[in-house]
Length: 288
Image 1 (cartoon, rainbow, N blue to C red):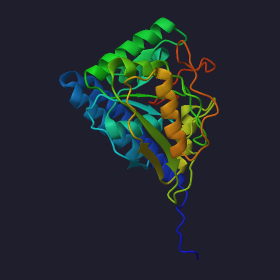
Image 2 (cartoon, rainbow, N blue to C red):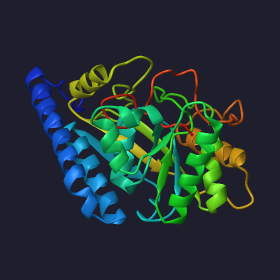
Image 3 (cartoon, helix red, strand yellow):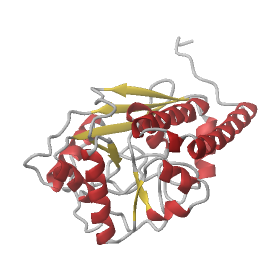
Image 4 (tube, helix red, strand yellow):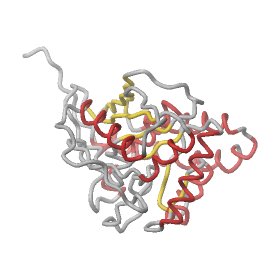
């Protein structure tokens, strides 16, 4: 005996019970979004979304560990984070109740599209410079009105062991609104504290397969680390992207980025043909 306990694997019966709870929770979210949202103020809606996210993670036995100085929930900040899983959105929502960015195709998805729209998601058309500019303006307006916004500037997900170059296009919203950029590092851990790739949502993985991988874990921890805010004043979007990426790689104890942030007319990883968002039932990613 080493004195270190090893968490047992989740049993098939336990997985089934959690799956049923997850489905029930998803149905309840839609009901609350349809009937409750119209009667709530923007601040109350953000708190309701944060509550949904917390319940989602609770059903899946995912614990959120927050490090660093968390900005005020209703502060106008642009959160820039690395991206691993569709769980990232739920983890960040529990902490800050922010709004997110998604591909325009998501708007037409059954169930998810309507829910994302009601939650104040910004939709951006793939490969359209005009649409990216319009979305940037919408984000800047939201920031000026006091809404926190999250972008994932890698434009795709990773396994958490590396950080892809950042696309800086949507960081122009921080420049325009003169709000701070908060780098946030996300990583997943087992109950013992080691790295956990079960949450990673990669390649052509289906949502069903991703969910089953998560359900096999008896418990999982997502560590959300807030770095020091980066002032947007007198900085370009490329500089903001490079500084945010450097802060995140340093938190992950990775080598500094070999390449600067990627400039792109639309800020979208066009090599991905499938739409991505941070809400089930499909892939989580928001371009930036």
